Structure formats: C-alpha cells, structure tokens
Length: 175
Image 1 (cartoon, rainbow, N blue to C red):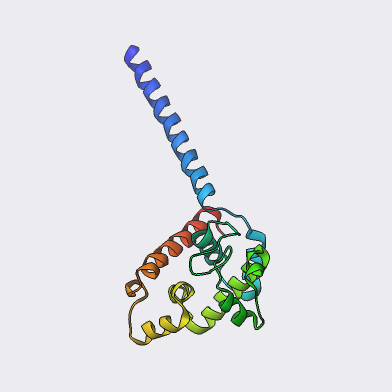
Image 2 (cartoon, helix red, strand yellow):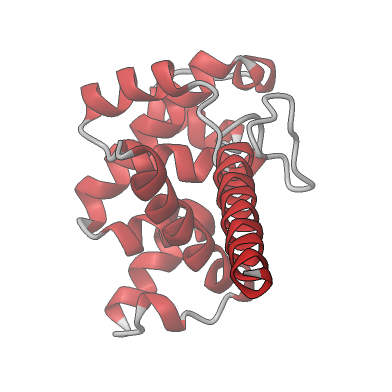
C-alpha cells in the first residue's frame, strides 16, 4: 500500500511539473513572439500580398516591437527602414521622424517587401535583400551564391533568425 501511494505521488508530481513546464514555454513564446501592431501589419500585408508571418518576423528581429528604435546606420522604427529607402519606395521625400510612426513604418516596410518579392520572387532572397540591399543581393544571385552561404556575416546570421521567427509565428498563432 505504501509503495502504491509513493508511485501515485510521484506520478502526480511529474504531471504537475509537466503542466508548469508547458505553460512556461507557452507564455515564453507569447512574450517573445508578440502580436503588437498585428492589425496594421495584416492590413498592409493583405493589401500588398505579403506573408503576415514575414512582416511580424521582421518587426520582431529588427526592433523587438520598439517603434522608437534607431540603428547605428540610421535605420528607423519597427521595421528599421532607411529614410532613403522609404523615399524611393514611397516616391516622395520621407523624413526620419515619419518612420517612427508605427502605421507609416509598417506601410513602408511592407511595400518594400512587396517590391523585393516582385524583384526576387523567393522569400529567402527577399529577406537577404531586406537586410543587405537589393544591389548586392542581385550580384550574389548572378554569382550563383546560395542565400544561406552569402559572404556578409550580418546577413548570413539575419536570414535564419527571420526564418525561425516566421516559423514560430506560423506555429504559435497559425497566422
């Protein structure tokens, strides 16, 4: 009888620990892979026919959902847009201050992703171009370098981060 009680207590402890562990993982995923700005991102992703998982992944990797982020090279806001890129994509002068506004930043970022999709057609190359620039990306494609083997370390590390985040968004939220 004592042995049965001991086994039962151990089973209950294991079950409780598993529940605690699974809920911790669940909340950790929701803390890291946020849904801030999802409504705006979905609106523009739908309009420009860009994967919402990619948009959310880029926001997460680029700025961790911090709209006031400014990089050392001058990339601004949630999607870390360079003002010169924004001006080119929007076909108007875009001031740095405008890119701190989440709705406008996401609009520019998603429109830029759609532009990159039109040019490169492949999600991995779109991600590479978003980070490294379209000119160097076109050169790598012409040189038959694979997206996972590009010579820029920053972009080589950036690509798997965005792909992993895309996968997590799809798995966690089924976007």
